[in-house]
Image (cartoon, rainbow, N blue to C red; front, top):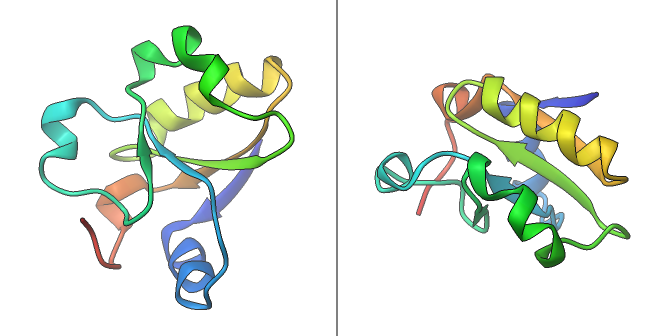
Amino acid sequence: MKEITASELEKKLEEGEHVNMIDVREADEIATGKVIGAVHIPLGEIPARLDELDKTKPYTLICRSGGRSGRAAEFLESEGFDITNMTGGMLSWQGPIE
């Protein structure tokens, strides 16, 4: 599984790079803020929402600490998606949130 740190992702975004991000946390966690531009798909909904994702695009997954997004990454990789997990999750994120 490919991984990226929160600071590496923040640098990419600051440099204007477009990153397809999916936040797999629950709605109550998202209410506290998420990385600007991230799409919210709770972990439990990912299998039912695969049709919303494009296998030709890479995705970076985000959760609270990196565990749930790691599980989601394993699943999505097994379905043929190009996935990177943000290690440390939102607990490590220092950048702006929406």
